Image (cartoon, rainbow over all chains, first blue to last red; front, side):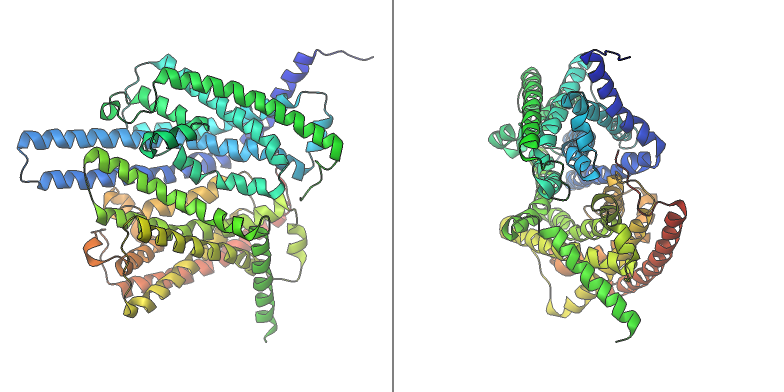
Length: 304
Length: 287
């Protein structure tokens, strides 16, 4: 006797099924909490200490400056400390976003290519589900896995590095954060299909999109330092706008607002636009990939 | 040639050749050259812009600290590349190419094979370090001075530093016999350990006291200290909190290199034994 299942139910099951292996599979190997949660903190701590070293040298200069009155010196030192706190906070937020970006690169964009190498791709292509559900499940599972690292970074920022945030609008903060994540993972879904077409170049492209994107998106410094033109161009990667908006919401008074790119509202609007754009492009590139698979019959050939 | 030496040399030579093919033959040489320098240059620029941001906000100008940071970051490329180069071999062969089972049973030294594969990364790193330093000297007012008389000390420190790194890298590679493929964090985090505790980008004295003790116990701290003392001009030397003459530090590096070599052999054999016992030698972890 055959059982009819609605397409919505099938796709929801697919989403959960693909997310499940990431959530549960990872928990079966708890070593990843140490490797993915704690070890990467060391790299972030380095950037924190760089700003603290800059701050210590600046304060030493202020202390030794004979031209300053005691009041002026105290005010200058307080301002330097506030700046260091904000910049360390920038690094902590950048470190949080690093976790998601690395996940997008290595566990979203490269994943279909990896599935092909593992021999799973043909099974996915044959399964009676939307390929968007598959990618959506990968994204949800990836967000869960990565959240551990992101939360660890935030907690370390507050309790180890002593960063103090000034949260003024928690709803806006949540909206910006989730819009950034959806846009980022939408981009990952789009790249997943495109990477599949480019064999080993895809792997190297992922490696190439680490430091240059950290640079162009201002992961460890205010992105406006790059100059407005470069910063706007870099905004095609949602992390740049997301970070800028999050920093505005958490450090509202930083340097008189001179380093912000756009207003938070506008950045959220653009991020929402990027969400739609990348999800549509992901759907189109999946369609293109499927067409290619049927026409050339080589999409599941490994080691190309 | 002695058969054992011959076997190791053959393993090393062909592994290095294979490593070079894997690294470079996915694209045209010109594109590969660009690819090899973009990452380190971007990494250097992150620090440059951090300095620019702070200098602008704090209205400070501190070329000595900037030179210190830039040179430390340039030489750190060796650390990241060598550690990742050795760490990735087992996972790459086991999970991606799924050739580990064939390589493993072939008549080679697998330990030497890993070292050979990592050699490619060291060569690529050397290229990237030269480009980064050249870029700094040409465009960012980085000043480098290396007296001819200091060259032997510089080379000796460099070789011992690389040998230490290879020893540590093989220890990590041995661990990867037992870990799943998604452990990018290990390759990212262990260099982070040295990045943080060895005073690569800031004077060791900025760290808390306990962390300074850790830093002084790590051999790479002395490699970077010797290197910066030799290549930065006297007016750009800053107090890092590390005392001692370079020759003593070189002695410490030599002892460390020997110790990590012995440790790497022990770790490799132990982890290999555990992986064989648990049937994990050719496992694949696809989630």
